[in-house]
Length: 170
Length: 163
Image (cartoon, rainbow over all chains, first blue to last red; front, side, top):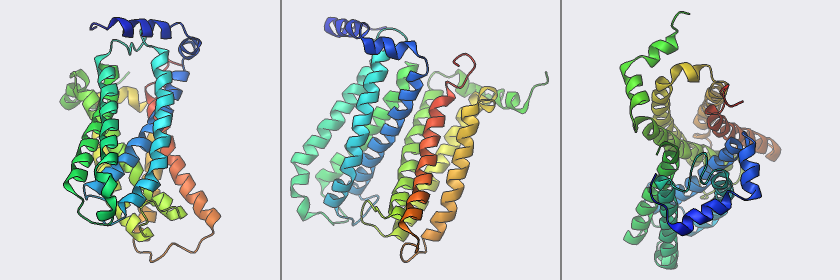
């Protein structure tokens, strides 16, 4: 077990006193049921983002309008994200310090950092390369910036999936 | 009791390597899950096209060709990683009802798609079928894959110690 910052430890202790923690941790099938929805959310989120990344990289959906694809995929991406956020919070609340022990788990924190970086990558894309999407909307070959963002996104989300799976083994 | 075929598989050197290694099992799981995301995404894209909600504006035959290529590559990766994961815990998995259910659902899902996708790759336009029937067929397919995810997640819990 590694050192936890004081504020983080106090927050985790506070979580253990909540009603949600008691509810989640006293019925044994709640956890796998929530995990199932977490996985469905993952397929929606990572699947839709990866498809867009593959278009940016020129691997799939070649020649399809990038902006149209973005518009069509975003509702799925956000649905997946919302589902993951809600179910992920429930999983975390179940055992911050007891059971799975998410709080002292370094892989869990790595996963959160990777999600943050993936979000940052998307924000950067949105405010830079995507601003001039009109110029390359239907082009088979996308600008270098778009390819960079796409590659980073693939790597970061693969990292999130890997870290997520690794939490239980570290 | 006589040792079963599952014990024999479990005793193979490769199975033992995965079972006893520190990183082999989770690494295989990561590969398995990551390729599963792409497999289901490819299948879902075709299903949506079939139901009339094409995501990228592609034609149904193009969606079918794309799905056919991606599903089989991803399925291959899934099958290999899944077999290795199974070997490392063969006796437990073989008798696990969630695992058996998952296998059955994957078989039905892949069989149905292989038949439909190969036909659809030759379609000029979508088949003349009522919207309701298309919705039902696409919906059943999507539900099968949601079932696969659900059954997968329950494998670890479908054990006497848990229930």
